[in-house]
Image 1: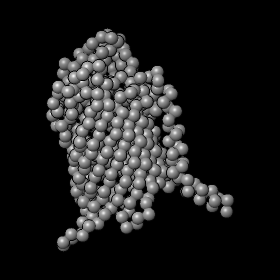
Image 2: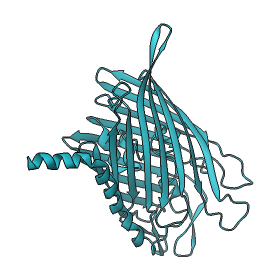
Image 3: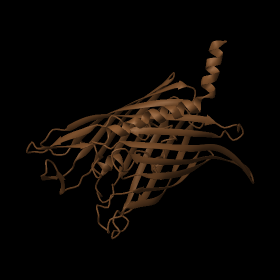
Image 4: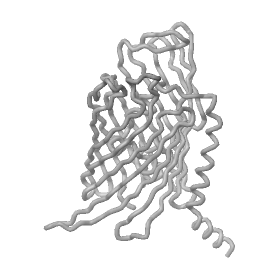
Length: 369
């Protein structure tokens, strides 16, 4: 009897347990005051093109959605929604004015009982001949700095519909051909909670997500050919969001149209910097489990460095589409997004299109609510 009462109390207070756990993430703020993130350091990786065309088209709103291998980038708990196992490949180019840059991504995740385990590989190649970098207060010319981040992801479901995730990242930065690779490690933590609504016909649900990237407040020390060095903190990024998902059926002459709707809102802030704070809003309509259309809007503040020609805030509308290819119990997805990157200067025009391609394979279908 006592055990039954305890189980009922836990079930009734899942939202309270979730919100209480969020509070645990907040004390990291006090540890970041002496490790201020440089606005431009490795922004291509931390705030650039993401390894999912779906997420990119939905204005990077993935902290409360999950269900893909790449979800661990925004929320380590997101892979917990994978039903059995999944693999993902992604390719993106370019990054803003770095027109020759390339971003490669590969990942795999599998579920085992109440755990999900994942491995991901991010590789960003700037390919910027003639670019310079400051190391030890001296400028050095670089041709193709390469950023690689390998992640081990673990998710646990302590109670039904509550997922707790952790990333352990090993970060490699190769700046010069004749200097060794600089290495650093950092960890991310995240939570995801699903609340199914009393709407069996439409299978509606709400999902709440929160994460802190680099809650370990890590830094990296990098070296020059002259053996000088500099140290830079990684950004400590906090994100929180809400997603609503529902399946609707609409009768049209001669057939039945089935539409899965997703709407998501996300807030982002940095604990060790006053900039890149903003909101993201994304939507998706998936038609008959075959075609998906996406739309989003994002905005965040920037450091204008005191120049009136620099923007202090940027905003943009995003869009993209996807195709799902079901095969018995398996599923194969192809997603694409292409947009002109907005300029950060009031004198600049929109930069050339960037393109993101994503290929996903699921061992079992992911459309179950």
